[in-house]
Length: 355
Image (cartoon, rainbow, N blue to C red; front, side, top):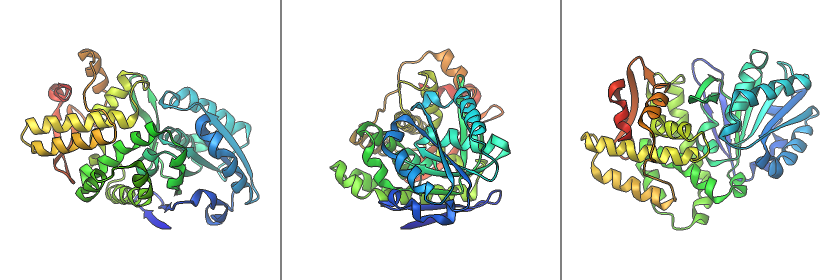
């Protein structure tokens, strides 16, 4: 078993456990779940049919009562209406500050369950059991929770790290290939911003089976990078901004198409390619890097090209980006594969990212 600890100045530490087959041994984790009178698993309909019964049974072995809240899958559910429904369910179950919420699912479930835990009764214990690749390598660690508004992604939320994150790459076996490749968008991001060795390694896989065989190592490498960045900058005031590589463009695309046309990983892939295309034009990045990113995105079936979008609506969405400081947008670029830096773009020039 791989074990990591993510500890920041402002919050208690998050324990991270990574192991193939761990999902069938959660009943052994009494140090995390043994003391709760009530636990609530929040999941979505797709994940529930594969994994909810098993997790419920294992958590019940600790002697408490275990409830389930099942939401509709997809980014469209990550909104205030769904959050309100979760609050009322928690109230009906009599959940108190001495109980716990467990997110069983991908990034959407983790974000909304974490925000519910952060805000219900002003905060109750929270655990992550991520079942998608995006959640396993990225969103389950670092404490970002929240919901979307129609005008922008993740505009309402809180920093609320999980007490523990339980990662089993075997959960990925029930993912459709499309969503596995979607998660590779975030994996590629980590190679781009922090590990040229990971980037090269990803270029070497010919078969999906080989990729899955190595997934425990890949997930661990990504989470080591994420842990190191979060420990240095929990609230995204400095170095943590490099984790947003491709996300400025990606979030605009997701919002523009109402979270239905492009998945998060697909939108980030388009963002990574096009922000690098811009940094090549500006002389920041060698063109060879852009070609290598294109090869890797093509290898995993991820898109590169910007879709056609109305300029005025793009500007309206972009202006709500959380990465703005006054009139300055902080944008991550990569001078070379494995190295990231932040450039400051004035609001008047920010739309050039989409040209």
